[in-house]
Image (cartoon, rainbow, N blue to C red):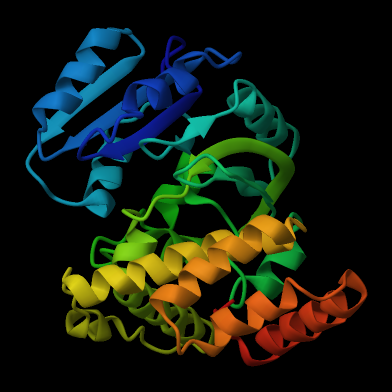
Length: 330
């Protein structure tokens, strides 16, 4: 790396502009920390994406236009073209707090044994309701103990040492979904990780997100990643052949209804966690309307009507059950 090379390379893949791309990009360009390059992968060579980036016209941006290859492959191309010591992720349409990069760089330099760090996240609904702060385990031991049953990182918020990313093999392109989870599980095999207990990243929860549209296939990819992790711990061959059997959900009317249910339940669940029972009740009602036979939706709707002194021990019991059996459900 030359003297003039940036310390941080931000890598972002994007395939279309949903209306927030420009402000999302500017949240990186307006950082208090300036020693970075911003590599944007235009997946599918979308004309509007090109126009948005070209209008911004910032020398720190490197725009790579290419045929549609998917996020996983895009990220690897971005990493291959990067010059930084640290790789930071940023998802298109999301927003980084102006001190995000400075805070993460300071932390990584102060704690050289940490290979990867993420942050807490602010979330909003499509209609603008504040879902509060999504927290994650912060310490290495806690993350490794809980990563199987609880999401340990927000992908767009992470910063990772490039040499570590290369050493573990980067993103595995056979993982069309859950590529981040597979990466975390390979990193924790050999390195220490952390989350900063600060909400330095924000995102709008959208029905068009992968986790809602393709949640079933995403879970299937995550399950294979977990099987591979356990195989590595036992010095066995990874069952990567299972990936070829995974297919995406059909985007039909039935699937659209499922997306509606999952979206409203997710928003309700976040509001429930942040003690906003009135708004949570509204989202659970919407979820129940789309899925009237869902015991989960009905249960949480009832819980919003109960006093906190009853809700709290129920939530604690459920967390212990999930941890005990490795359940990845709400």
